[in-house]
Amino acid sequence: MRFADIVVPDTSAARGALEVATAYCSPALLNHSVRAYLWAAAYAGMNGIAFDAELLYVSSMLHDIGLVKEFDSHTVPFEEAGGHLAWVFAAGAGWPVERRVRASEVIVRHMWDKVDLAEDPEGHLLELSTALDISGRRPEDFSAGLRAEVLERYPRLGIGEEFIACFRDQAGRKPDSLAAAFVRGGVADRIRANALDG
Image (cartoon, rainbow, N blue to C red):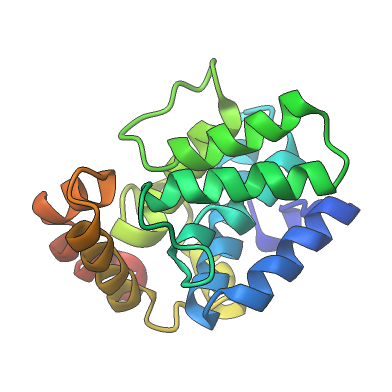
């Protein structure tokens, strides 16, 4: 699998989601969102996993939008806030209700420890790809060449420390959230040990 083999959907919804992420995310968070899709799509291609590319791409672009100040909720975890925003975005894109719900589910589930592939392939792929990109889980699933190609085109730009700060902020204000559980579980050490930053 090479970078050129990864198919990026070119639909109005995909372009719109990238536009939203570009407008609201920091450069590091934007590149993380793009890499989240690239890792997920590459993994799917290498492992014969069928998935909805447009749904995965839109969900990838919006999965961390709840961390930015304009969409940060004081009442719900960031992934739930992002799921709500994705539902609204998808309504504007003309998606049927069931597909809007799927986008929301994929975003919420990316924070789970594990998402069942048979039940939710897009959620499974996004959980896997974000775990790789943030905490460095299972880099051996991707060749050194592919990792280098993706990181050259979409550099990390200090995403690790930015994410640690975001999670600590979320944990302080939302102690019952998954982000808070991650902080208590030592996510900062895993982020700082990520081989992708090596």
